[in-house]
Length: 399
Image (cartoon, rainbow, N blue to C red; front, side, top):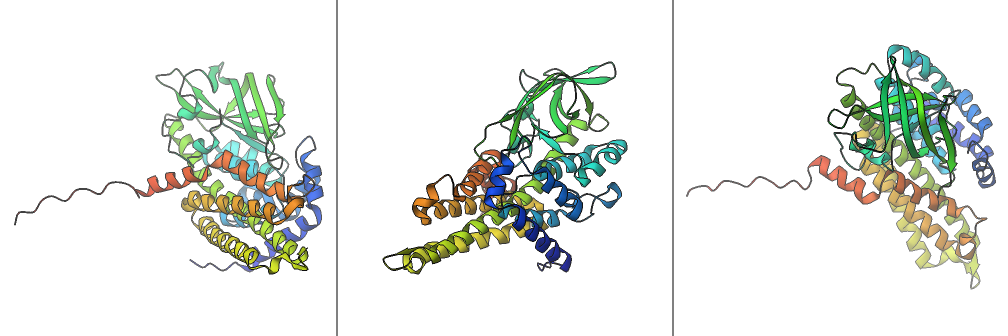
């Protein structure tokens, strides 16, 4: 493994940081999240056209840049620094890999080019508060029970005249209120023979009702989606093993998402720490900068070590997504701790609504609710590694 960044990666990070530095100050971020879409559409198009951001990990044959998921993770470290509100996570990290893995040749050639170009945004809708479970981040649900398992609830799909109709409701859908394309997880058949499949629903489908929800973290807008006998298209060919393919593709997308989210959280934690260091060098108490006090130095040193350790884990996960769960746990913990200390060390001003310190704290808390919590991420990784599996007892040896 070569841990050094390439010249292309360094240039991408430099260019992205320069653009975001000009367009994503705290005031601009707060203004963007209060728009109907929840993000700055003009900035999104600039990032898509100038840097090819949503198509970084999409193959060139489908109009993408053709880079690796590691490049996408490095880019998201920069977006995390400024808490960029954008459809990037829902579109490029969750939806595009699923279309690539499960879509037919026609579906891939139809959907991936506009997704890579930023002209089409997408969102993944899974029933209930089950996103972390569906992505196999906190447990391995090999039967897909998070989708309802054929019982009442979730989203039901039924075959009608050679097509499919969906009925149900999904809450907490990232960018679900504004995405032009929805990937909806629904179960088909009765309880005994139920299987979970993914369906494509267009934004103008009759019977589709969407509304934006109030969220803890406004930089990650979410929507509630109601499907009232909505016409849908099956993603893939729906063969005999399609249910297992869907669960496997969701788990693979979850590993990639964990690596990206870890890098994003590290970027946010690093920026929160940098702003805190800058503040304590300027703020004076008892005739000297508070950053000169030994107690403050020790707290900042501990934060620096924690952030750097999380950054190393995130970079490793970008290279090996199978380590994404552990990296995400460490990065979220580092962000939560750093954001909390940032509020404390900013004193009275850190608690005000006008200051941006609370945005980082909310990002940490909201990401744990969506993709964690940290202890479950670590427990799942430990189970997968067999860390706490009892060792077989040795047979007694006759002497």
